[in-house]
Length: 282
View (tube, rainbow, N blue to C red):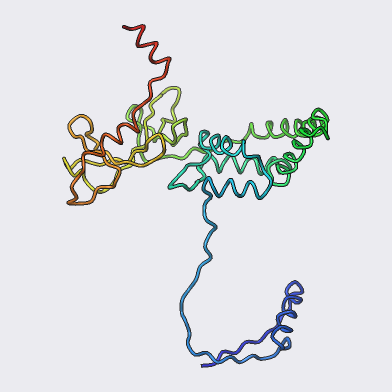
């Protein structure tokens, strides 16, 4: 089997590249190239997206781009996790819907500030200030003057921006409205859009299609404080004590020993304020 390839170009942008290719192969533009093919492989390939950042790979990228310092890496990642801009799934950092919206608004309105070059430049200026080569007041005046005007302009424009809430298929038990997804300190939850008339809110419960190995009820997927998934029977602790790190499989026996380990990781810590309140009640 033979394949015929004719090299031509009408696009000036590719012409230089094509000339270089032809010179390397000792052929002219317009020549007919005949190549004998031993076998045709029908395999189809797709471009893979770049892998998600992990904490380690994100720190490495920040170091390479000259952003931040070792003392700021951990607080930066902690902040965007606490504000629900990203979530950690199997060590990967995944942007949330809230994070995507915030990122879009910042990029569209603060192009001079939200970019790698600006951040690296500011870091260099901080170093010069620390070394006594630049005055910090002068640096702030040069930055904050234009930034303040831009900030006032954007604030006026954003007053008219209305964030569309994501509507769920769960009706509110109190007023019948379809509940919407909201983000809080502990993640995504369902809330009634009729607030403040209706203040109904509840957590989003994820379930699996495998029944509880002990009682046959529905198994829920929950997260520990460290964002690790675990599986628990909907009747726990009322009438069933099933809880496991592993997703149950049909016919699989449950090991009750891991229940204590999960309970220890999900147990709420008693703060000093809580302890004082309890002491007062006593």
